[in-house]
Image (cartoon, rainbow, N blue to C red; front, side, top):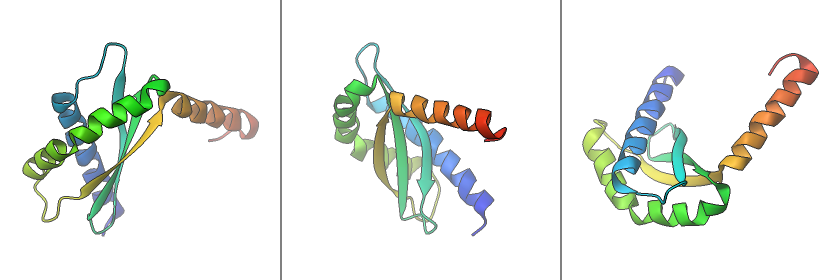
Length: 116
């Protein structure tokens, strides 16, 4: 399968999962979660959904809220995405602090080597 096609499908899945999260999951003020990326397996049986949570110390609470609605989100994904096989979602959560640390490490490496 062409890598470009997989990238396009990953982006479509990211958009649809993100929209479904906004409809089905309500967070407390000052708490948010965003779908950073989706990585579907080559046969589209599984899609790994990476969710960034802010603030990082609310990670478990957000995980419980999303996991309680995962059936609704999966059902909506199946209805909206026209694919022979809609991937089963596997959620992965990480705190925003971890993401910021990764960005800072990349910047430090760029400063040292001149390229990312």
